[in-house]
Length: 212
Image (tube, rainbow, N blue to C red):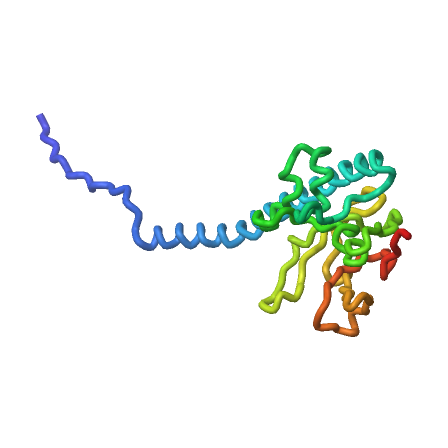
């Protein structure tokens, strides 16, 4: 009977070498660098969609309010030493406080949306209403703007609700700022250091016309 000499087999190892691990880590980092901007863009897009939906719902509430109050828009006013913001009167029409907050905004604010007739100083002081046209902006959101260290708006978009019920996105570069100072409206070129600043959106009549 022939004898067979058993040759010891080489032991296999399933462990990765350091080089292989470095290659895998490099691939993961490369994929992350490629995908993170995509995820960030999708996140911003989703938040913009929510903001747009909020303004559509605010528009519906405003129209119901207009129907009940003979076409008068809600104004910011003082009642018994308490400040009543423009959104307070229409909250009974919405039943949802979340629509007054943009996902890109700051939750400590009462609302992330500004209403034209409520915030214009002349309307607030004289209890008058801005005479809107279908192209005029009823309300807007500036939470999607990016600012530099001085607070100047450098890029981003406004989301605006127009009088015809449409909601549009307008790049900040198309929106000049007017100053309200000592009861007088001034153009952006005059650069007043004091007073309230108001964005002017395309197709709007400015300075605004008010009800008698």
